[in-house]
Length: 330
Image: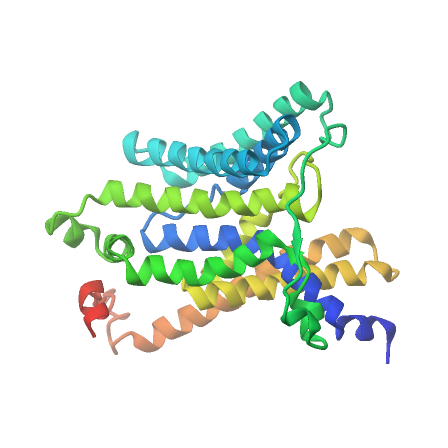
């Protein structure tokens, strides 16, 4: 068998997929929550960047995992709160506000990188902490499966647990019901006493919470330092993963797994005599292809559901609004 194929069909490749998927799954869940609330958060790139930097700096100067974790999560949620303030309070366009926050995060982290580490490239001069790896007692002894699932960073297991947590929040709690109600029909939700802006702010804060863990994994799990713009587009890929997964728990996980596989594959083929620029292009090319196929399928499905003659007279089919309360009771 070809050495490349042999390495791909190996437990080590499965291990690498889960490892690479982790910083995509966390922000993808955050995007999905805000999308279901009707106010998509595309500032996850900046949220992850600020959280990654904060975690490393706090761990380097305090030597505490707990303080680093709390500070990183707080920084991510603060960024999400700023986005909520600009969009919900000041009525700024959420897309423009998110892009501004992403640019702000890139600049502010480089500035403080120089302040604390006296380097504009990375924090390699600082001795920061790394979240530990866990060996699963029973699973690690299982052939093949043990090599894939055991020995990961603790944040990888938290990412896997975040999927059922996402399901529980959205489908088993009053907050999740309100988020879905606001996303499907904000006027109807407001008519029954739901504060739409408050619910959307809660959704943004949840997205900042999950996105922060993705950033912390990058600088304190995937590697052991912070480097400028180290998110490298993962926040944007997470948006594609959430969209491709229909913003549902299982769909978001499978889409993140798909993009994780593509990223891991790009790492494995780096040993071939292929220009490095092309290898770096692979994850983003896969994102564009996946979203194109998804959009084409969605448009085809919409065309099929259009009543005969509606397009000719410039009418759109009536969209049925699903009441989340009825959906849950059914």
